[in-house]
Length: 71
Image (cartoon, rainbow, N blue to C red; front, side, top):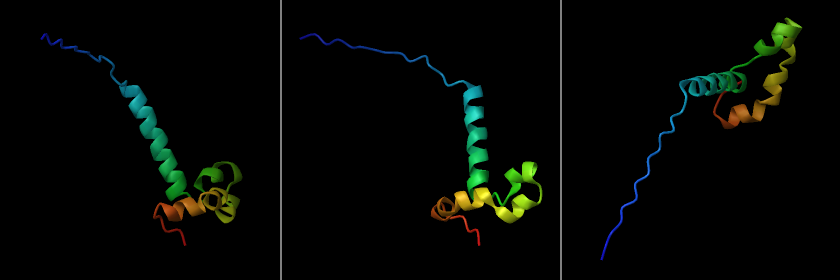
């Protein structure tokens, strides 16, 4: 009885740049969902964005499901 051993090598490495980009996207998403109180839109709308809270209202239920208190 002969046994054959098949070896495979995987030389694929994840680029550091890709990990960095995904980390930045994750951090931005975490800020938007968990902590934004009008900061993102204040760049365009000014002080009115802190009153309207568009992103806060858009992510309100997701914020509570993730455990972030908001009111």
